[in-house]
Image (cartoon, rainbow, N blue to C red; front, side, top):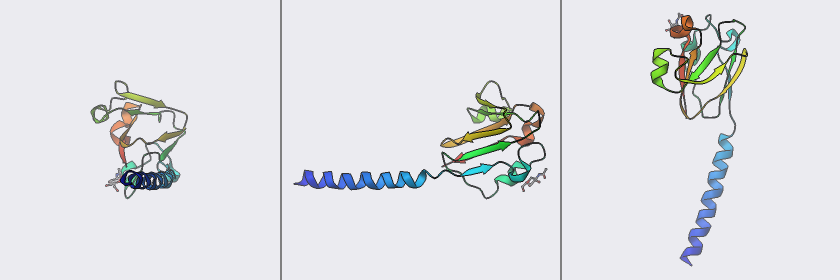
Length: 126
Ligand SMILES: *[C@@H]1O[C@H](CO)[C@@H](O)[C@H](O)[C@H]1NC(C)=O
């Protein structure tokens, strides 16, 4: 009898968790820099103010500037060094790039080194 109760409780908990997951499936999309897009004209720290992100959300990078390609890097170490090569996770250069945020820290580094200190940024996704 106790076994049956546990089983029923288990089914309810699973259904509840499934509902929660559906809730979270609504990923938000953010255009980096809004109308200004992504590039040296953009104050990324200002753009980031007040925003929060969830895993699965999408950052959209729009740019026409030829030097505005960027990469994601695997860790804070390469992020701090502005090393777009050794810690490379993925390279983006289409000018309309969509990056799906992973859970935890996500590191964005311009591939053009001159822009790195000004433009690199990281976001934490819950
Ligand atoms: C970018 O925005 C931040 C936060 O609003 C501000 O503190 C900083 O001075 C701005 N930088 C430039 C270069 O405008």
